[in-house]
Amino acid sequence: MYSFDIQRPTSVADAVAALGTDEALPLGGGQTLIPTLKQRLSAPSVLVSLTGIADIKGVCTADDGALCIGGGTTHATVAREASSYPGLAALAGNIGDPAVRNRGTIGGSVANNDPSACYPAAVLASGATVVTNNRSIAADDYFQGMFATALDEGEIVTEVRFPVPEKSCYMKFEQPASRFALVGVFVAKYADGVRVAVTGASEDGVFRWTEAEEALSANFAPEAVDGLSVSGDGMISDLHGSGAYRAHLVGVMTKRAVAAAS
View (tube, rainbow, N blue to C red):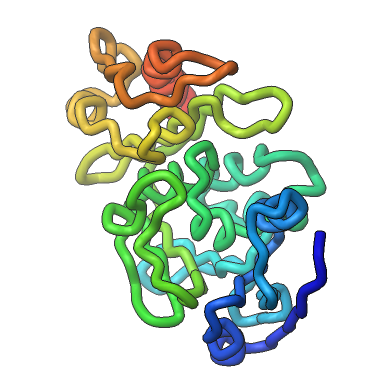
C-alpha cells in the first residue's frame, strides 16, 4: 500500500467532521476497502476508522418490535444476537469465514452495496430502514444500482431497523472460493404479504422479484413459483456462470427459501 493518516473518532459527530475533506474515506471492518487500497484502486490520504464508536454497535429490539442493529455491529454479533429474526441471524452466520465475520460490519456491507453481498437482500426483502447520521432511508429507496446507494458523501450508516417477519429464509448458491452469492434469495413473509429480494444475479445489484412476491402472497408454498422465471437479460455473466444460469438459479433458490421457511 502507501502512506496515509488514520483517525479514530469515538463519536458519530467527530467521525462526520473527520470525513469533511474530499480525501477522507470511512473505514468499517475493512473487508472491502483494505483490498482496494492494496490494489491501489483507491488512494485516500485519510482513513476515518468507525470501529471506536460504541453508539453504533449492538443489537436491540425497539418498542415497535423492530430489530435494530447498529451500523458498526459485526456479522458474528448479528449471528449470535439477532435471535428474534432467525433468517437474518442465519444469513450473518454464513458470510465469508470466521475472520470476515469478526471484522466485517453490517453498516460497511450496506454502504458498499456489493452486487453479490448478502445483507442487501435481507434489507430489501425485510423492507428495512437504513438510518444515517442525517436521516432515515427506506430500503426501496436506498439501493440504486451496483455499488450505488442513496448515501451522500460523508454520510454514515448508524443503524439498520428490520421489521421482523412471520417467516423468513435466505438461500445462497455460493461461489466456493469467496463464499459470496453467485445468487442469493431472501424471502420474508409478513401479515400483509411476502417480499423477495435477489442478490448476486443482476448487473444492477440487489432487486425485488415482484412476480414471485405476488404468487407467494397468495400461496406461501414452493410450488407457487412454478412456471415463473426472470429474464437472463441484464444478469451478470462471468466465468462462474452465464446470465441465463443465474436467472435459472433465482427460481431454484426462491423455492428452496420458501420450503425452508415453511
